[in-house]
Image (tube, rainbow over all chains, first blue to last red; front, side):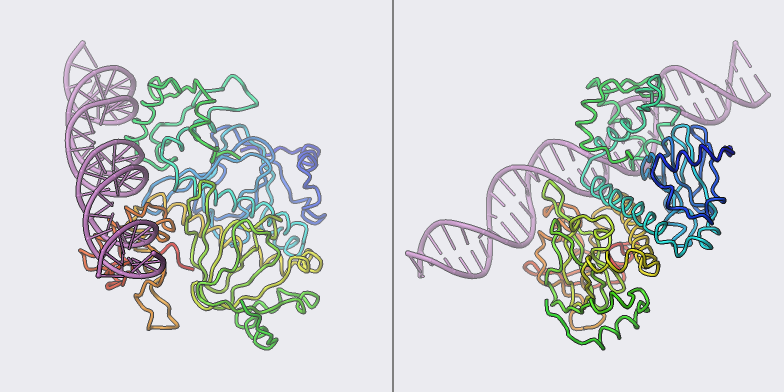
Length: 233
Length: 233
DNA sequence: GTTATCTTGGGACATATGTCCTTCCCCGGA
DNA sequence: TCCGGGGAAGGACATATGTCCCAAGATAAC
């Protein structure tokens, strides 16, 4: 994580996403712009949530570990998105872990300033409501998707999410350094079963595997299998 | 549905739940108190959401039907809870159907007045944020619960939710006139499989069945099976 | 280089769940 | 009363998924 001390770029991001007005003059000076490298951890489940982050560039991966120690993918998110918003409202620790799935830029602001200057700012509150209700709807969809679809569809969806970065065509189709065991946890199945499904995908020429790495060969047919991509955005 | 034209009782409910201050003087006159009988439909998925409802007494059942026509239970909710809150913020139709699972009292207010008098009311906005983030956290839990637990646990949880009404001990353990086919859809499984699990519960003396009705015999052991009750509140 | 260890992929089997179909029972209509 | 329709329970079988374990290649320690 690196702070980008460039007020102009920060202002540029605010304008680009049309959220200049959600931070009033009192809060504005307390905004900071941060940069994260791909794979870098942004926040960890259980840590005290002291900052509200606004994702303005790049893609992040949100995951959660249950009490029994099982990890689940929640979603991949791109701008415009908030991190720590629920936690700010509820005054709780981070519910999930978030890491950068690509190079990422975040705007961060300490909850202290939100409390102090934002608690009565209808513009900010409405922004939070918008963001959170959108999240809620997606979570709602995810619930049905997971309940109604087999691992096959979930894996297809996951592969589509992770294998494509619009900003860098070189990476297309390359499943990066994610261990397959992690992937299994992330889509909510066992490593064993994941292997079975990958095997099947290979036979059908949808993907290619070589020692721990997966290469997507046929995005279109994967998309058909996934139905709609539940992990995206 | 019947309107209860009793401003005092309405005020009483607001106080009881400590939400007197979330509706400002402009909105207050537009509040109405409604009463629903057990089983009565409160709103239907896909209908235009014109009102925000606050559940102040009783229990409601929230369900959702997917595009493929499969119904899923979302949750059971008791006061204090909002219905149509997400829809109000997003300006969308009802995402779910809600029906009274017991005699229910709701406070209703037309979105028109919320827009007109509440859009800049930080108190109201913060109330919505609180309610919605709470909902979000529960939905989050439900997601994991459904992904991680077999039908057995979900049924146990469902039976506990539906078979107990604190306010009327006579109904304890009686699964009312819900068709088992509905129950199957509600917990996200097939009717056939539901029968299997019920059969197993019978063998273990957890419940008793007689021609379409289920009677809970051992709440404690059911609770153990359910882990934590995901459909409640 | 050799051995102990670890990771990866996959076999064998058990369990969970879905689909299709049959049987039984109740109830209304002729 | 008798018959047909429709719902309810369950049998048979297929599929999805989990658990345990093993074999082969890769890695690390010595």
